[in-house]
Length: 292
Image (cartoon, rainbow, N blue to C red):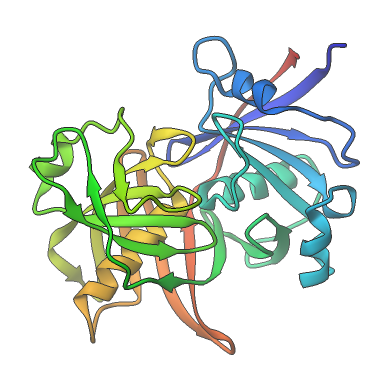
């Protein structure tokens, strides 16, 4: 039996997604269906596929509603290979734009909504030039990890960082090292993270801080998707790692340059500890119909 699907293509700094609305949770796609949609040769092409579904209509949405009853909408996110993911920082901003443009929510500049994800409820705020998402508390693990990659001369130490999904951040010496790495091959993290991890390679700018803002450049290999032009949670993880290594006096606001543009990261205090937020553009590019 075939399924007709109306979809929207969107991106956040080049990290691109296929989005579709299924408020009542009536459309069931398996991993092969999702991978087919995301395929860049035989499908629409995307780094991930996002279903907009009401939390009450999805099994995992019950946890979101228990955490925050205001989380009416759930971002049902899958990587390009069809595997589910906890969170996507660029994806949730594009998800916000999708909800607003399709009339599912009304959100003026400065207003926020709660969004359910597999990584927990996230507060999403509309800004003048896009959206900012509170990624919540973060975890920096002092665990030993090494990362090998194609055209990286020797394995390098990596810092595990959790921002609702797992990351390992590797600092490199200069832009030449960063440009030389071939991320068509998945980096190898040792020991292997139990759930896998996104891997970020980062070069600090010179000078690192200008007018109180930290600056870094990053490339990323995303678990389940390969190298992408941007990774929102990865940008947050990279900024958190450099901030951690920089020590006392490091800034709380960062600009992260990715191949697809620039995103903002900021660390701020809350009643339950420090949170990290990600900001940047969210563009809807075109709509279409496909049959699965």
